[in-house]
Image 1 (cartoon, one colour):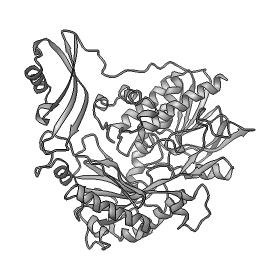
Image 2 (spheres, rainbow, N blue to C red; image 1 turned 120 degrees about the vertical axis):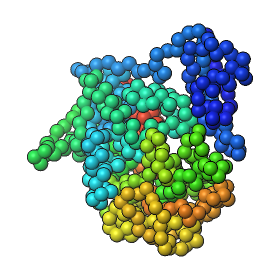
Image 3 (tube, rainbow, N blue to C red; image 1 turned 180 degrees about the horizontal axis):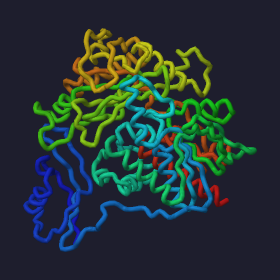
Image 4 (tube, rainbow, N blue to C red; image 1 turned 90 degrees about the vertical axis):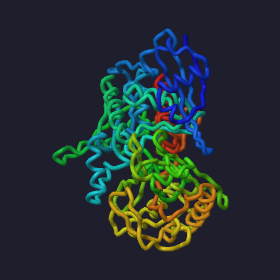
Length: 529
């Protein structure tokens, strides 16, 4: 017999399966002797009041065994010899597109400009230690995309877009902890996600697909109004250039930082449009300070609670000001994808045990905001050019290295240069800078007012113990590649399926994975016709 219970209990009870069982025995009258296994189905923390509770959905297997697997596996068959589809990019959109193609009997050929997920580590380390950025292997480019080394958070508000549970189950099937099926804000962690990504790649290859690293798409092959393949460039170990053509419908999942792809599309008159962004900074607090604020307790999280998260949002002069990609117990990382750029992001390991917690703090920025200030034509590339301009200004202010401009939070709000900076997780180093001058006025003023509001909502949040690090510009793609609502193909080109975050249709790992699966399904329909 299976019995399900929804319970609301103290953290010290939720921490132990035996104590949960004892609670159910005492409060619900169950006979614990007949329980062969207990599984937590859903878990969330309610920290709205001074007494913290954990909400649990619990399933008991009474006098019967639980299923061996805690996740729902997907069946993949060999697709060697089947029709092929090209997938450009091995981020979450591309990987989930490739796996879904295999489900549908289509052979994926994944083309990734960067290196595999393990080789990427070496190039990412050089950004901090040598202040050098490999334009083809960094936090944005390479197997796993931007999400591989940017935390692995799986929380999404995109429930209506598709099957979130399917995406989470596929991650579990490839090595992620089944906790991601349980927690309200699931998280794999930068220390665990690379192995999961490698397992997904191996699955693609074992099923007859291909994954080609350090292979860059240089052109789409277009006949009439149809994309029939791509041209690629690979440089071998001896420096020789290898040019190749690959044929098949194309899922274009290049990620939000593939600016050369955007420029190629624009110069070849392939319809794209400028898209609104969110621009701001990374805000870093001591983790124990956030714990004390969020858990309403001077001792912080204590023994039984996880490192605290927060979420803030307000409206200032018609624009949203909000926290983004919150990383409890995390680190701030250099996320440039080319020379003369300083841009930051955040990540956490699975244990979330860094002494700091950080999040993006950003201002909703519209195309018309940029048109008023940028000395450029109002083209579909205007938001991307604004990103580039701001990242270069940050690089100049930081001494033309990967050190980042930084300012204490209260000093920023009061337009003061910080005389000193607190310790930080940002490894390349910081330089005290007037971020209130670096950021455009319409962003600075809204951030300042937003911080005042957040400080009133959570006493102690607005503090000079907190550090602002600039700049946070890669919150989403600066353009949208237009596509038909029904077929997901480019609005004017058959056989081209713009996909995921880089195409402007997703905002994170899960929504990109969902979009990748949907694009694969439309490729199947396209090939059938």
